[in-house]
Amino acid sequence: MTLRIKLLPDHISNQIAAGEVIQRPSSVVKELLENAIDAGPKNIQLIIKNAGKTLIQVIDDGSGIMRKDLSLAFQRHATSKISETADLFKLKTKGFRGEALASIAAISHIETHTRTSKDEVSNYLKIEGGRITKQSLSTQPKGTSVLVKNLFFNVPARRNFLRSDTVELKHIIDEFHRVSLAHPDINFLFFNNGNELFDLSIKKLRKRICSIFGSKWDNYLIPTSETTSLTNLEGFIVKPEFSKKTRGHQFFFVNNRFIKSPFLHHAVNSAFEGLLRIGYYPGYFLYLTVDPKSIDINIHPTKTEIKFEEEQSIYSILRAAVKHSLGIFQVTPTLDFDRDKSFEIPYSFNQKKPSFPKIEVDSSFNPFTDKSVISKIQKGQSWGSEPFSNKMDSYSNNSNDELIDVPKNKRVFQLFLKYIVCPLQSSMVIIDQSRAHQRVLYERFLSSITSKKSLSQQLLFPLEIKLNAKQINEYLEVKDIIECLGFKIQQKKEYILFIEGSPENFPQSKIEELIESILSSDYNEKLKDNFSQADKIAKILAKKLSIKTGKRLEPEELYSLLDDFFGCKETRVSPFHKPIFITLEKSQIDQKLN
Image 1: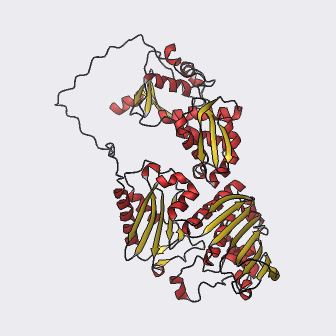
Image 2: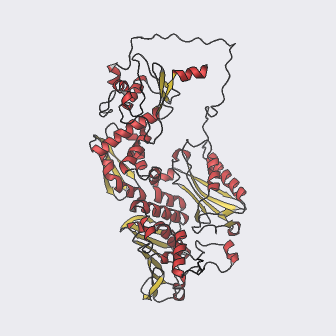
Image 3: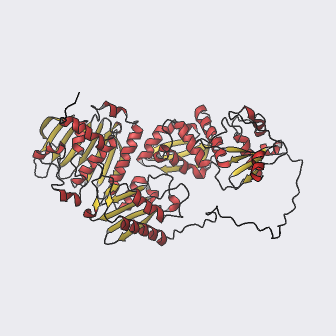
């Protein structure tokens, strides 16, 4: 049977189009904020409830919409921004496709109030699922208010795929950050469930960044600027020592539009070469102003992708400007003498053999039975684990089914400031010191959280930590878990936490950094979603506090770590599922040297 081709009704085609433009509540927020900005306002309010699932409202004091154009504004491909093809190459507005409002209206209930400077009263329009249900006059100040309710009410499959309120709110805050950073010349207010999250007054860019991310960011920023015939570059880069392990503070704007460009990111990254620690990313807030004719923004409905006419030149300008700023502020790369590890000087058999110092060895010394070593472990550190020697004796019971018989007169030693080597009778065990310590700390923290029994020490001087709205939202989600670890925290002000106590033997110098890591959504999103919050927090703390590669361990520290490690429930892999140790058999060594 041959099916006939037919045109889809408007309400169905609008729902299909909405699937490209509107993926989640944050997509609605982005489109409404950008429409508001195109109206030329001085003030914009964003109001949401239940992370935008039940209500999103954007209010501006811009130019408003004329009565005769109001209903037309919610039809597909209806726009005031362009009228001919040539207009696509001289865009100065955020929107131009005429798709956003029609897409939102197709999958929600919308109420709009708008008034121009020439109108004596405002105009009201109500739309449900793409159909106009009411149009009348109303009382509203100059500007526009768009209220979106019951998002995805007629697309249950899409609604069911929405994440928790916490996750959806994070996405909304991300979009709010991008828009508010693009326009420091506009006042922004942001409310969630009646609570004010942001109140951003008109300020210069540096102050706007500090208003969003915290006042301490004033010390993190290096100004960057460059003017050429192709582009005008302004903005800030983040000092390398304050770089993060996530990309949450990377912002590119082209003609005040937030864009994502791996190509431009590579230019900045190459300028930072040699300055960043492994696994860390540069932070930046960079604004490019170019001739609209030299770019193409009409690539994707979200308008975050861009093509440059002079792509290579823009790359070179950006890279040179960032390197110049780093040079002016005397940020220089550190020498890395181990960079080329593959190159080794060949051994000369003719040269005189070095004489080794004579070392007196006590052959009766047995580290595995010396109680003086084990006694140096701080009380409570093993937290119910078995001693190292006992665990090694019974190691055949472990789930990896490997029998490890430890001779009692063998020493352990550190190799390359990274591994702990345990010689055995016919093999040796090589242990990654950082991963082993991660496993110890992870099980310890998880035990504290689940048992809710952790000793706390009072701080001599309470520590004050200022957070942003996203971090406060995260804190409220994990407050009980943090307290189970032994932290004593009071929230006496809206965005300020007072740390009055910390877990026993916890490094006080790292408290602020660790709390911020726990409350970092970017860090949390790197962990798998099916992990519990407690599991995530235990992983974060274990990663941050573990012994790092490159740290020299004294003999008592080696034995203390091994004693704790072999007392763990799981010794095969780290909390991040990386192997912790390998066993190298004597036969394998013989085979290599045969």
